[in-house]
Amino acid sequence: MVGGQDAAFEKAKPVLEAMGKAIIHAGGPGNGQAAKICNNMILGISMIATCEAFALAEKLGLDHQKLFDISSKASGQSWSLTSYCPVPGPVPTSPANRDYKPGFAVSMMLKDLKLAQEAAAKAGASVPLGAHAESLYSLYEAAGHGGTDFSGIINLLRGKL
Image (cartoon, rainbow, N blue to C red; front, side, top):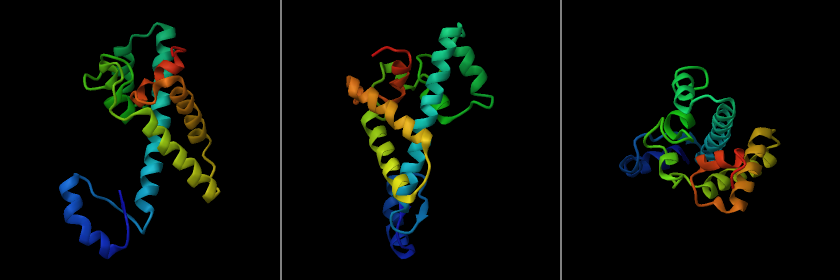
């Protein structure tokens, strides 16, 4: 996600290609940051939805693996589910299998959600799910979990802090 003038992007592209696989020019100056905060707002919201589903499944007696097997191949499929499943087991590389050691820390997710809220306010955009995600991650961070992986927010939803 890169913003900047076309000429500057082309000049920087060889350096950027050495740093990452997908280099996408998002447009003019500031558009790389805009893309990052919008993308991470999607991620923060989708992780909360994934965590809510697994927390509900636990209450309903549905096995984690069964929910994963179904949702990962159905309309509930998302990166949050298939790469960072918030419960131990279904995705071996998930932080849930390492006691929620980050990956992507709660404090970093919260920073991006706050930036998205600031940008939305300046642009006059309505982002109520982003605002709610920010409030939930704020609660989780305030409870002392800022250094854990953002998928650990399932514990807030379970009432376990």
